[in-house]
Picture 1 (tube, one colour):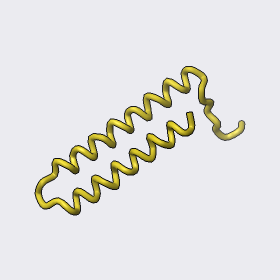
Picture 2 (tube, one colour):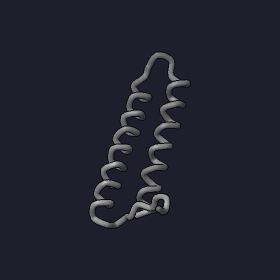
Picture 3 (cartoon, rainbow, N blue to C red):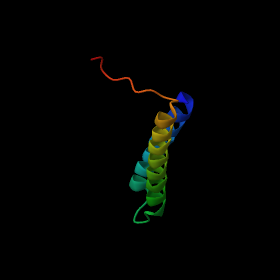
Picture 4 (cartoon, one colour):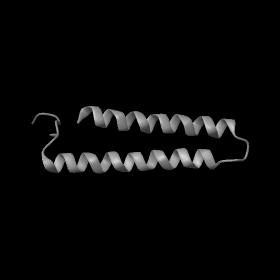
Length: 67
């Protein structure tokens, strides 16, 4: 489960970096930037849903501060 979460997080960071690159590189044509940011948002939503499902199924446990 940890590997899947890390891979999705790496995909989010890669998409964010590529959107910054396209934003700086393309002059006036922002389709690639918008596409990269759309992928980032989709991966973020997928990661959130995955964490909620894994938490509800008991696959992961919250580890907060001890009481």
